[in-house]
Length: 181
Image (cartoon, rainbow, N blue to C red; front, side, top):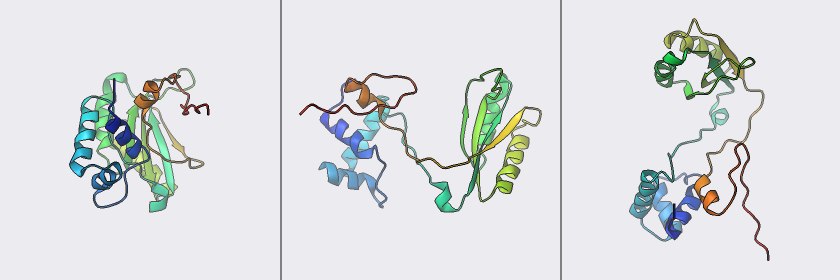
C-alpha cells in the first residue's frame, strides 16, 4: 500500500503520541506545515484504508495514584466469551479486555482483563466483582499482580516498516536499518 510523503510525515509525527495541548491536530499541522483539518483528514484516510487501525491513549496509572494492578484471567467456555467480555468492558475499573488462546496443559485461561486500583485489596475486590458481574463465578480464575513496571508506550506503525523493506518476524521488534555512509 503506497503512502504519500504527507502520510509518512503524519505517521512519524503521531508515532510518539499526540502533543498535550488543547488542539493537538493543529499543533501537528504547525509542525508539518499544514492545517488542522488536513491532519484530521489525513488520519481519517489512514484509518479508512486500514493503515492505522485505531488511535488510542496510554494512561500512566501509577502517576495517578493507582499503585496496584493485576491481569485477571478466566477459563471461560468459548460460547460465553463474547458476552462475558461485553460485561467486563463496561466496568469502570477494567482498562483492557481481550481473548487469547489457551495453552494447555499449563495455561487454561482464554479471557484476560487488566484491573487497576489504589492498592491490592481494592484490585482483589474489583476482580471478585468483575467475576460475579460477568457471570464467571463457575470459571477457573487467576489474579496476577504486576511485580514491576515496564515502559508504557503505544503501538508502533508496522506498515511503514514493511514498506521500508524490513522483514516481519513474529515476536521480534523491528529496528530501523542504519544507512551506509
